[in-house]
Image (tube, rainbow, N blue to C red; front, side, top):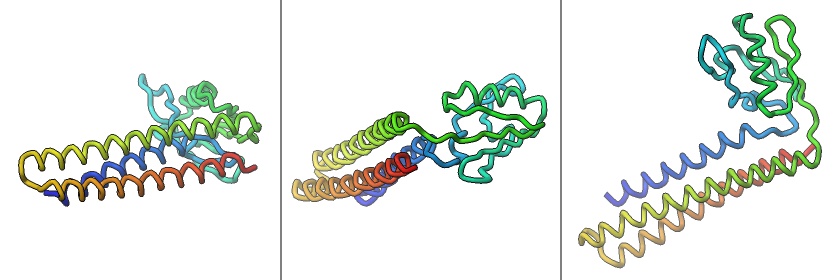
Length: 185
């Protein structure tokens, strides 16, 4: 039972890190990344669809993204979605191919992106701390129900804190790497 609680705790914390990685992948660095377009939704066939479901997205080089739209009727809709995305990208159409040149980021924009990355990591840390609290509460309930001793509760609480510290360190490492990516030219 106790191992199950600890494994569940680690699994949830891994989920928080996974969510953080997904959020950070949408933040722009100076290099072209197909993940940059993941949040974009295109008006297609009467509903909103992710851009990668209306065409293939590729990064042929470090400064260019290509969107090969499968249905030529959706090219204008995809262009409009990219323009309205707030990413600061200007689409150039060549038939069913949309070419996006990734401009260099200004120093001010880089700082804004680092600030946004900090916000995402703080949310992940809060999530991990909430998971920690849930794990400790589960062990307190077991102690209250006389399933574990007070000493065992203390030991499990220390183990949970150790696990939490490891995940917080992972989150800080991810932020550090992303910040360097954003600030590098």
